[in-house]
Image (tube, rainbow, N blue to C red):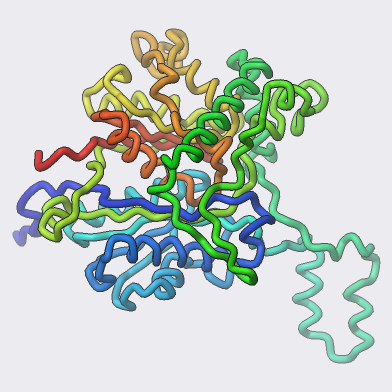
Length: 438
């Protein structure tokens, strides 16, 4: 019987560097760009900053959610545009808001298996570049119009239709299986865990204050690529999503957006629609050292989970966190840095309550009790998606890069990166600070 050869030793994956464009509110600084443009900028910036030979990269993976059909495999198109060799395979993944997380683990598995020694993972989202949609009836008529034989036939195209039927529509940010918007699900989740409007506003304010401080102190400078945009080519060096002047009074004055009039989710305690791209450089550990790089962190255990999208759409981290901790044989108390995706303040607080609940631990997780208490001093200390923004396909690699930087800045050893996603999906990964060969 023929045996399949395997790597001769354990191949550990390390994070060498991570970068991102400034995250911008959709419809602002990046309005004249496309998904491809932002992805290319992130990939090219990563290569340049690390003086990396593009020929050395074995694989490129990027995540995105709302695709531009002209560049449906944006990872390949952007990699070519950024100067990677045409011989480097590249593919695009989509897993809602954990698309970049999936890109990272896909690239990591390529390294672990021996398929590549160096890989680049990332993500991009350009909600300013969303392809417009038309109603199904309009699409049917447009296809039928291709068979019209005379100009008079085109009268059938518009027969019985109103002008509003012909207006293009943006895709709805909603769960397809239930029809609920993300905000409606967040409202329902917050209510089920007893998270008040005041608590959500206070958490949102915390996120903006921490992000404003991190920006002002220059802490985020290491991960942000200065990005110039046409036609004026103004140079952007910071996120324009952070509201440094926010206050509890301003947040309290905002009306519910999704469940009116009694909901608790507002524009102020939700992450904004955001454009941006991010990328990380991953290597096999010995390869990185041989090439003279000093890794920032090792990638550890990871997991993906799925729940009922009708009842627990955004609760993925509460299920993924205990699973990945158990895989690694560590407790929540041993985690020094926690980076959790902030889709909504109510979602984050509901996840924390679930992790700290004995009842949730017993009834939903089959444990003897709670997963553990979360000290806010360990959580999102440089801001989160509520303040820094949330480009759907790019947030995962932003979380990973921030976690690695925080481990060094805070002299920590172990970080947890976790996020929820549409479809009732969730992800968690443990990241270990690199302190030399293990």
